[in-house]
Image (cartoon, rainbow, N blue to C red; front, side):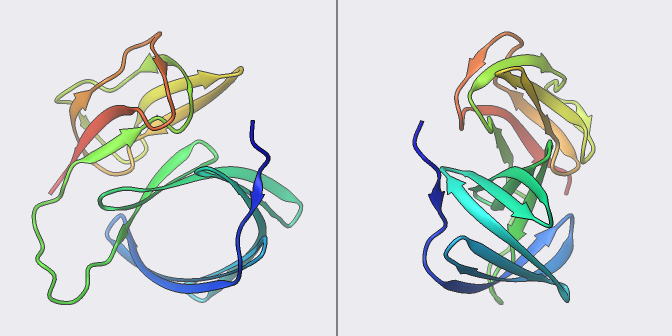
Length: 173
């Protein structure tokens, strides 16, 4: 296993995101292993190290591990057993099409222990879709938004690798 690396040199960026239809203006500043986020007038600071898509975050005596991956519609953030889709706001005048399908991928290598998702089933944000186990730890992959299950590409007992496509979710329009 490779040693975790410290997050790189000084960077500052403003992002316009949307979660569950709610716009979010986020500014982040990163200098070495220190990260500061300004979100809706609230400031969060933490020490952060990165290993692939995984981020180890330490702040106020607490530590957690989160995964962040860019998808077609924005950023997937998985933290403390919950997954969120943070959609990127489109520039003014951008063509808006129908909602695209969300591809829910394995956040880690492991074994599928439960598949709760069924093709054609309607799900609500937070509903359990798949449970994966690795090294005696379970990860519950939940619906990031309301929608209908278009495809299920895994089954209980199957071994999955980081990034494998598990479920395709069509968002409710």
